[in-house]
Image (cartoon, rainbow, N blue to C red):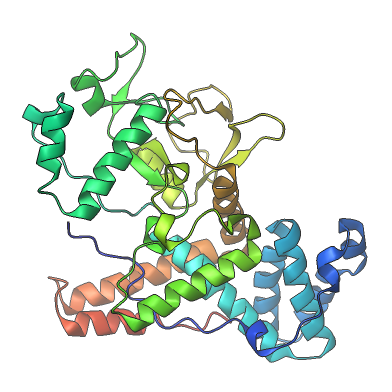
Length: 360
């Protein structure tokens, strides 16, 4: 399977500035009310008055501070307050750059991208033993994606969790009976935390180090992920859902989010960045309820949807979503113009150069 990791061209991500500092831990036990009294936003606003660069850093840090939850927010506040009080503006610039390079850029570059499951010949469609034999000749990563999608479809009732469109291949194979008023379409097994954060070539030193830095930073500001997911478990069923292909594109672009509803298990408030999207929620409202059609297959983890939604909000409010899109498009276009076949070392080198950037 020809899987092109969208993060392979990333330049080395610098270490988090906290690794060079000793940061007091008092804020980690503060209440929300006590944290509010420290006026982090006010201090960031004042810092942002220094210059255009100060304003840029304050905007990025303020966006993260606005949307991060609980412990992650307090950790960020601790860092901001320490370096503002110490007048260590370089650390604040480094922090803003790091948050873009280690979280926003990797998520935006890899959202909605994963190896496509291998299509099996129709003679194996309904016989599990024959299908297993056929899959034995497929590359391991391909077999994993095939099985993952099949289990995901079974759990989700062979339909997109958002639109309710039934998977047309499953309908053709008579895996499910199509209701008279239902629609069909091409569905995909969509990763919530992007697949590319789990796949890496350990022979590539920069790629290996980058993935380590990305996960260290994710665990720091999204501690709810710790112990649940990592590079080895990115393909867990709790991290995938069935989406109609156009819906998957919106989700991968961080233009569609699912926010877990309090006190209602597997219920989500959906939000679209653009109200011009033609496909509407199957529920008829912005709130959808996920169903577990096969109880042997675990349901999606709400924590992963939260992380996706928070990153979407930061991308939107900071304005970095469209900026990163333009940046990635320019890098891809430059590499393609140099090498239309995408195979030369020069193309890879240019792509690497294009992905080397200081954001503040």
